[in-house]
Structures are given as C-alpha cells and as structure tokens.
Image (cartoon, rainbow, N blue to C red; front, side):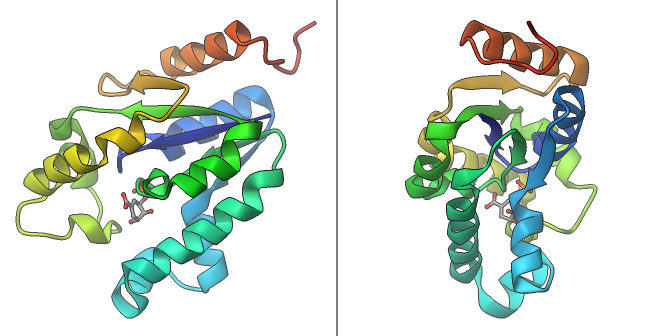
Length: 175
Ligand code: S3P
C-alpha cells in the first residue's frame, strides 16, 4: 500500500507528503527528485536542454519503477497524471489523493520560486488558470480530493488517514 499525491503545481504535495510519511513512518519519495537523479540535472535544465517531451518520458519510466513500491508516500509532479499510464501503474497498490487549491493561491505560492519552467511566462496566473482547465479531467481521476487553499497540514493529514481507515487500509500502530 502507498499514498500517491497528485495535483497541480504548488498545491502542497511535497510538504504534505513529507509530513504524512513521517506520521505513517513510511518512506517519502518525490517523482521530480527521482527524475533529476535519473537525468543527472535539474528540472529547469531538463526542460531547457531536452524539452518537455523528454521530461515526460523520464516521468513515465519513474512511474513504471514505482509500480512495485510498498509503504511509500509518493509526491508527483503536477503533470504526472496527464499520462493515464502513469496512474495505471500506481493505482493497484495506492490510494491516490489529489490536492487542489484556488488559482490565486497557487499563483501566490508559485511566485516564490523559479523552478517551474511551465510558469516562467509573462502572465503566470492566466497560465495557471489555462492549465487547470486543460488538466481538470486528469486530476478528477483520484480516490480522494482535498483543497489545500487554507493550509493546515494536521487537518489535511487527518482527512487522508480517515479515508485510509474508511477503506480498511491498515495504518502502522493500529490493531
Ligand atoms: C510540472 C510540475 C512540476 C514539475 C515540472 C512539470 C507540471 O512539479 O514536475 O515542472 O507539468 O505541472 P510540481 O508540481 O512539484 O511543481
């Protein structure tokens, strides 16, 4: 059993993923970090030098490798569910949780860094709204969706643990 966090950029997947992994005493993995290890360079450099389609190929190969994961909390890049095969690889062994947030909140959070090549445009908020609309059906493909706009990690973790219990999934420490 694993927890896979999907959702748009800056919805809190990495931060919440780390906290949830700690709570469950499971290992935390991040597909973007695994891609960077595979490529031997940063995501902005992969996009700049090899293009988005090469990045998506690496993402798909990381998804295949994670199909046998066990007791992992896996934070995925925002475009991970665009390829249905990526979700298909992980669904049998995972609870798939989609984190959401209002476009303005995403914009505020994402404006703090320059590591997201897809948002390095003149009008990032318009781009966020456009991508959210294009990707809505991919993000809808989750077992549970949680809005992280009002950021309270304890409440968000409690929501995920409650869903695990509701589905009869064992949490370490439970009888
Ligand atoms: C992307 C999201 C990024 C990263 C890459 C592409 C996307 O991850 O995978 O820049 O297509 O939405 P985060 O969601 O962690 O920012």
